[in-house]
Image 1: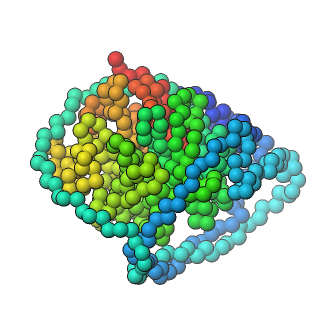
Image 2: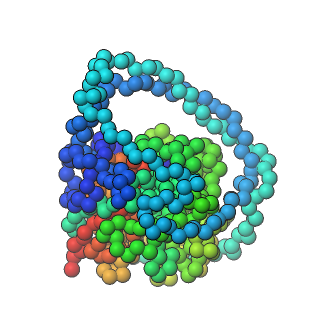
Image 3: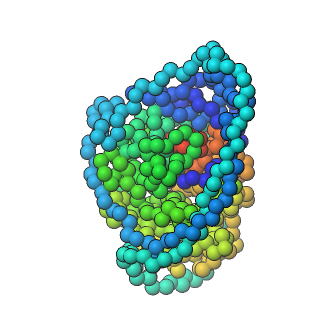
Length: 509
């Protein structure tokens, strides 16, 4: 995912990753600490807001250059229909017993040791003259897509038989007492250079985000990421189109002890030590820039992904426009995926309510929690019988206390306020629903709980503040969380990687 998140602080690098942070998070930068280092001596990233390194040279008074963007329209032919996605897959060889050994030296060389930073005294001797910034004209290509006849396409899928469900009552349950958060800590960096998983060397995953979970089978979870970049990615957000860009990649883990981080066992690969793109995208701005997974779940042996087809990212931070929200499925354990051509929620005039979905099977139904494109929408709810999950006509939407068919844009907001990047699970122990999402207006990743998916949901309880973790977003719950221990992933924009967080909860008795 590449939409720039809301920022409420100044990014800085350096933290002890296992430090416990009280909730609500302390305002203002924390003292500087050296960046974390993994077992191989590789320096990782720290999303915590910290004071700058006192030994570092002072920041320049003026930027070295000022770019003036100039919009340049460009007619861009787009062959239609979409060509078939490349589903080339290779099995992963066993990872070396030595975690610091490069598994594929023929794919990527082991990086040279990082040089010592220049001291403040040495940098001061280079001169103190103030250089005026250079003014640069920066042409920004704005594609104007022009459909043209294409070649081979995916096979046409037969539409399911329309289903009309009757209106059924959906009363809300009595509210529960909000869960108290005792503490929240950053457990470990999951992806990127300096992580224990060394995803840059093992799977060419240098920069990525999201990290959505679901249990694919007992004892095994899938973890899917958004826009992913390999060699050529540089610190400072999402990478360039030429930095081995893949719209999404998928990892597997059987690690049940999350207290010290999450171990990635393997990733879906299209070549040795290279994570494959699962759901293809046209990668054409103003047509289909990318396809981003939003949740995953399993029904029997079939795996499902909800995803959004992004038309383009907005220049307004935290906003984007989708073409539609859709469903894809896999019958080979997540190796290859098929986008269902009929299970799509079109984004008419940019007003679609279920563009970014979090889908959760429970009982006889799959519940779909959805928001519009961008980060300023409200949460709607739908349900569908498990057997009909790919039949859009069979969905019922929660509207003013009823489950109503064909009412997606009339769905009653579940809670007040804005929400994005939803993650929802049902906790068997407490028999309560847990919902985590980014409240960009409050600058927090928050938790709510309820007895039923339609509520009443509790008031929001802060988990992460963007004052403490600048430009943080996401908040995707690990399925093996409990009523007491909530594990979730968090992304940070500048380091553009994924972190595992642990919230110690004190649920009401």
